[in-house]
Length: 553
Image 1 (cartoon, helix red, strand yellow):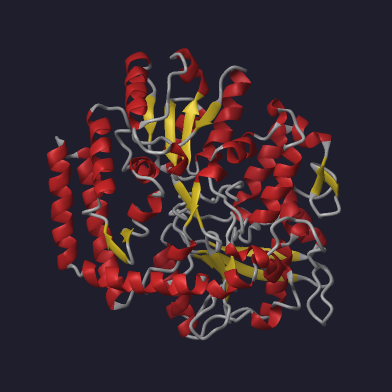
Image 2 (tube, one colour; image 1 turned 180 degrees about the horizontal axis):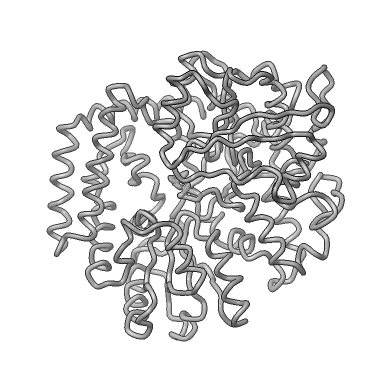
């Protein structure tokens, strides 16, 4: 969901987009304390034994702000799922827009002391800023009254989210105890088959294939790398084993080496990747407007089949739309995914284009502006539980699902498979309401059902997630919350280094005339970053990393 990322993308588009409806799904040491299947005892929703807020008994209305430039919340109640919640649970959510400038909007609200009731935002330094200034409500007193979060996320995940004062202020989104994620490579099926379905496993294979595409399809982008050229970051995973793109992304800009985090600019893998990307750019094999194009332009190219290969942190979102659109016109068309590309000589089973974290993507916090924070938490906890997840993912009962099994997984109706367009339209309409995604419940529910269907009846996204993407994401929980507060010394350094990185990354790809020039650009970026205090930032990040490792033992 990098959405994005994304990334987070971020994350997320990461992005982005992370915000993908099926951005979900990861095994780790938390399994002894969290639910790894939707099975076992009931989730406890609606069974609060101590007095508490019960959804539906009285109206609940609160304001909601998504702290992202790209995020605009759809009208609450216009789609089938939120309409049902509004009518049956008596919950109304009032959106507050970022206006395309989230940082400015957030700061304005803080200064004017007019915070929304709920803020949906990235974990880490900005949350701590609000917490340290006494603006957030802790959740500790609610966890046993409303047990879904505690049950499904597990104590270790919640402990990783606790603030320095020992309290919990963050409600995670798409938290998990099993692999999830969608990073990888989308391939235009029609073009691929017309070119003879050549080998598409190594970086050499990819280069040769892109040349074939360029020679035969003048109106097609051989390699689409998405908004902000995030696909180039995905390519870093091809040049080393056990190396997700996270390390050299703008979100982290630090490479694990022994017990320390080191500079991205001198990292051999990053340098080799940019040389490769620069070669593709010079030969017009990748999007020439990659660093300036808008997300809508990327989507349009994919939906109309004007790309041959698409590398992204969440290619399944546009891939699913494109697959449906292309198949509607030609049953032999559509999209497939391929196993992650790797440099010749590397073990393909140790190539991880993406990553997942047991804490998931981002978080929701409740501010002290809320008149009834417990009621809001009760809703968020219901939302992350089985009934809430079934509703926001697949609509209200009676359409695409009817009843549940002994493990609270939905019993999908025939319409779920026969009305793919209607189902996909519903899921696309609710994707931007998925603030409290429960990865394990959602993924296991849909995977269990999909496994009973013939291949041609399975959800396109679920099929490729189970076949490739979930198997090729690396657990990077140890690298969460490395970023310093923006107004700290390290935060100011991080901003300066990020700007150096952004400029050098683009310049190395689109301006360099040779491999040597790529390296020269990165060498200068390293010098500039060190002058800005990069060493101090890396030391700070290393300390946070080591703290995380101690918590995960």
